[in-house]
Image (cartoon, rainbow, N blue to C red; front, top):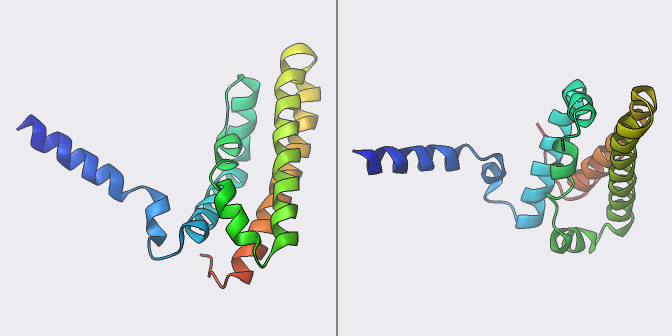
Length: 143
C-alpha cells in the first residue's frame, strides 16, 4: 500500500533526525548539542565546506549557525553571559569570512577566497570551543 510506505518512510526519517537524540534535555541544551555535533562534522569534513564555497553554494556552517535560536541563547546566557557572547562573536566573524570568501573567489581569485576560508575555519573552531565550554557549564556530557 502506497500510504503505508509513505508513513513508514516518514517515521523512519523522523527517527533519524539528530536533534531528537536528546529529547530529554531542555530545548536550549538540545540545540547546543546539535550545534556542537554539526560543527564537529563540518570541521572534520572541511574540504567539503571549501568546495561548496568555491561552487558558490552554502555549506554546513551557515545552517549550523542557525541551530541555536536567539531564545535558546538567551536562556543559556542566564548563567553564562561571557560564553554566549564569545560564541556569538565568533559565529558572526565566521559568517563574515564565509561571505568574503565567496565574493573573493567569484570576483578576485581562488587564493584570496581560500585565505578567507582559513579565517572562517579559525572562527568556527573558536565558536565550537565556546559551545563546548557552555556544554560543560551545563553539565552536558559530549560524545
